[in-house]
Image (cartoon, rainbow, N blue to C red; front, side):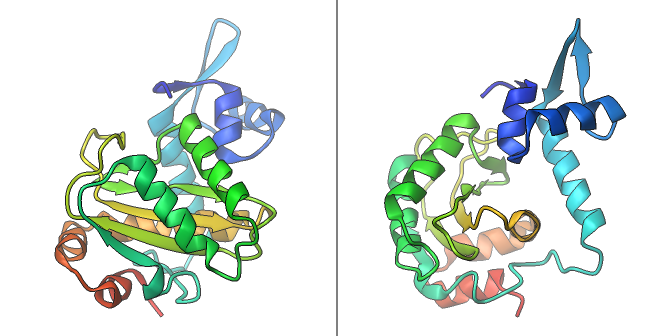
Length: 214
């Protein structure tokens, strides 16, 4: 995915209609600009805009970690050695498929890989956050892979190697909870000391404690 996005790409990324993206851009809510008669958006600006909207819409919410232990259990945390991106994603899909909230493993796998084709979910700081909202998931659920060596083939916004991957799957109508959790995970893992302690640990229970706030 290029650094410059079209209305169609932004709509797919945000999971809203193209008309909604157009209206936001026209009103000046969503940062973008016209090249001739065509709207274009910088990917980094869209990411920053999403994070800013989440912060404004969820005052008082902690961004220091995943807010519910129901979202992530230590059984859905795996520690890997040297692997490629596809292997990590498939392992995490298999973990999520064991959850009572995921009812169709193949649909989840297809959704995750379709999202990655749209744009890599390597957000920087050595973090990947593959995510999807689909009807065959009944509630938001998460799995985590910690890789001792950088993951082969996982592109990142800052070109830093990815070693921590947090996969999120949610029901189609769980937009607010889904975005809030993505923001919380990202904020927590931007702490260099937290990342270091997680990467160095071989204990899923400890890693779980670093990501869960209650």
